[in-house]
Image (cartoon, rainbow, N blue to C red):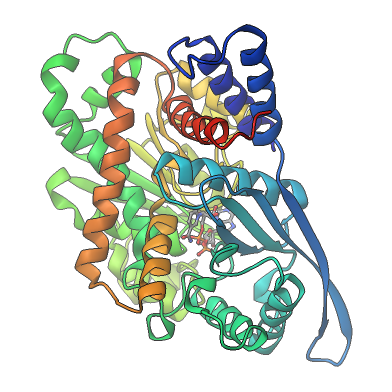
Length: 459
Ligand code: NAD
């Protein structure tokens, strides 16, 4: 587990160990041993699967592509987590992402464990046929460890519905006569996917921010008013006034979160910047997110990156370097691209007082400490970006029953689930000055620890 995740899990365990009301039957030496066991279990993955996929690429050459499936923990249910296609994929990265899935599912009470997959490629440099072969081979190599009741992958960066459809079809061929709809989530609707799955993560990211800064605060204002907690002060300073929002990443998560923010006019939002792998587009008067979405849909997901393209779209925006989105003077920064975007070398340049983690681990541990000391509210990944796995769970349920929910039902169930989690976390967060990430980890670790103890796994 990467040091940041591991360190926060350990802090949660330390807090639980010192809390005599938690597992009170465990006393003295038995308590110490049990917490050492918990640290050992939660800090390491159950299984690491690695393969070199053998693919014949279009020019006839045979290549070997490194691929991973890492199964971190299945205390709560079958392993669950996306498959990432990106050139920076490594065993450490996938292991950390798998651990985050374990915590995320525990936090939101989704009955799945944590897993993650990765393939070390830049998908943009492969043809559709080559990507199809990579997907097929991935399932062939890992077919023994995947399945609706074992380990259920989903899309992540560089993969989407198309890849999940291909993978599910291969799983079905390898396991004839067995249930297969629940083997992969994030499939196209026509292939048994759930309505609303594609939008779920971005919608959930925006919902987490909106619920916390608006609905929750409105209800709680009377007891929060005199609070000296720095996070309460930041929150209250941004309630009920026009907010400027910048979004890093304009893919599945970022573009949907940006559209939700754009559409949510009652909060007087203005999406002033969006960015992708090439550029940042900035206009302090606001950007037309729908027009940018239309453009991206026709250009492999990319934003317009030239003056000519912006003029053709009738969009007024400054074209800045892709990192500039991080340093703009905005109220809210939604991070929805990659890991480790804010780190010790650039954290001092970040001005946004509210940061929402749509991506996994976009703020490093060192940067987190600096921002937290400034009173910056960071809505962490395991809280904010769980919409994808929550609706994946609904997709898995629908696949088992072959009964399908309407889009409205899916969103209502998604928001209900996220609201329940937020309501269980926010009072503690606003009540004492512990960072929101630590609060969320405490909650998740408490759930996992209790289950491990009751299952007799600590002896
Ligand atoms: P995506 O591939 O659809 O989009 C990624 C976006 O980031 C693109 O706009 C791309 O241009 C941009 N980008 C790539 N490299 C960049 C760079 N160096 N600087 C700035 N921008 C860059 O991916 P996604 O599915 O939207 O996932 C984004 C993040 O959210 C990932 O960290 C992923 O793990 C996390 N996440 C995704 C889901 C999901 O359901 N898709 C769920 C939970 C978490």
